[in-house]
Length: 175
Image 1 (cartoon, helix red, strand yellow):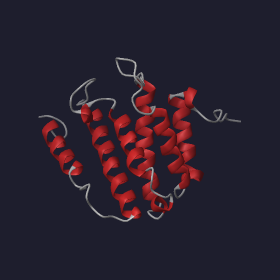
Image 2 (cartoon, helix red, strand yellow; image 1 turned 60 degrees about the vertical axis):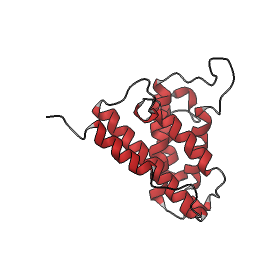
Image 3 (tube, helix red, strand yellow; image 1 turned 30 degrees about the horizontal axis):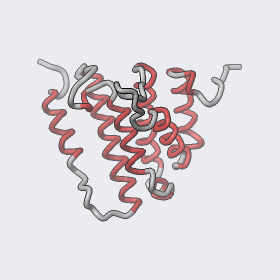
Image 4 (spheres, one colour; image 1 turned 120 degrees about the vertical axis):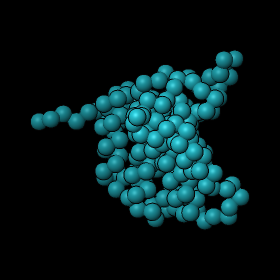
């Protein structure tokens, strides 16, 4: 008997999450921030489940089953929320900060293990660097409740342990 939900069941849940928000909804900024971040965070939760169950692959037409998917999620978060004021995130409290932290942590994990290219096969630059999306996420975290006092330090430690070249502060040493 297999452990955990089947790949088909996970895909069904993912489809439900992806179709939950309509593009033509007239929402306030606070609603946009909450719904968009929550939807993308749920995608990370599903990705982590697939990772634990061994359902991820190197390449697929379905990006959500690849090891690189958090890169797409982070980019989508940046593109869909960059015009929103910081107050639209803050109002949701530390729960919002935790979701942003989870997305950023998944991105750090992927950036540590997968070579990142910024050009296509014909040498044309395509989009921003994933590290820029990480910087955007980190700035959001720092502006969110408990972000600058707790979660940014946790993210910095995670970066120091997985991708030291991206760390913004030297590692703390034990006295």
